[in-house]
Amino acid sequence: MKKLKGKKVGVISLGCDKNRVDTEKMLAIVSQKHSLVSNIEDADIIIVNTCAFLESARKEAIEEILLSLEQKKNGAEKVIVSGCLPQKFITELESELLEVDAFLGVSDYKEILQVIDRIYSGERVICVGTPREECGNKRVLTTDGYAYLKIADGCSNHCTYCLIPSIRGKYRSVPLADLMEEVKALGEVKELILVAQDSAKYGLDLQPKSSLVELIKKLSNLSTVKSIRLLYCYPENITDELIEEIANNDKVIKYIDMPLQHADDGVLKLMNRKGTGEGYLRLIEKLKQKVKGIAIRSTFITGFPRESEEAFNNLAEFLLKAKLFNAGFFKYSRELGTPAYKLDGQIPAIIKQKRYRKLYAIQKKVVKENNKALIGKTVKVFAEGFDADQLVYYGRAYFNAPDIDGKVYFFSGDEVNFGEFYDIKIIKATGYDLYGERQ
Image 1 (cartoon, rainbow, N blue to C red):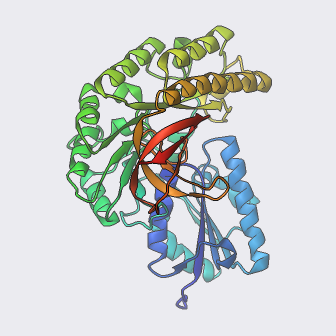
Image 2 (cartoon, one colour):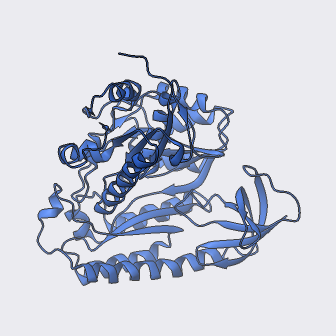
Image 3 (cartoon, rainbow, N blue to C red):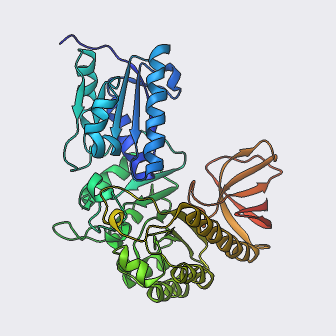
């Protein structure tokens, strides 16, 4: 095979932050031989790393793939599609997207250099194997000042609405030693964000067993890790030991993302979720009592099959009682291949939309109360940028995770360095965002 000269490679990363980590690891491998470009129009090779969790995500992925194929008319030479979409739907993609030069699955990123060589030799490559170990621990960070750490992949919970186990495979914790090596290679990180399908379950499948608490303690001992944020901790795995670690470890941000999905016991059972509405309320109260000022975030699905008006009202009432700091809502997506797809009592789209809007309206009132309590207080804000329209700086406080929560906008008479923390006195709240003045 003729030796391939270095190419310019551009990557489009879709989906969740776990997918972003996969992209960053793939970029590190690609950069060993080729150059990376941020503008897709400059790329010889375009890689689209896809999500396939919901129909809307698959639609977005197909649109990006088609746009990338259009770039072949403007100088792009090859298009590669990787990630969840080919992992789940390779048979359909292979026959329908004939202009795509190669497909890679969720655990095949380490083959990317060989795949590039093969497609330039004239071969069309299908490289979709069984979900397995991570593809190394070197990364090209695509975030600034903070970084995600994927501590496990896959899921073994088998919620009846979810495709993740059939795409990503069973739950697989990354060995602790591998994670430590990965984090050390990142250098200084102001905020390390731990992610997995269920972060609280970390280490229970390892031999010997480990735990999220053990991992947090190890990471906290690194001088390069300035703070740690926890995302996606399923409630049934949030132990008293973990709560104590959040409360007493100064490096752990007083914030937790705890996906609940519903609060009606009947719907939770149909979802194959392990909790109850009352149990969730008790856990939330315990977190608030044990961890002063903790910001709790969650996500919920409305319009699940057989969700009666009473069940929906139970969820709405739960939100008023729980007073979560932030919450996201999804309309149930009927996914072929999941047990819930076959359930009778599917909810019409118009009712899903109505319930979805009502939940957001309720949570908006809760957020308004939460934000009102912050007015007059001073919080530390991680500066991220400048809003040219409002002529103010913006950033995140401890209760704001990147991309999914609101922002803190602030005025400053002095120069602001992005990536640094500043004391901001909150003076106004508008919707999900806060406004303040630098102290």
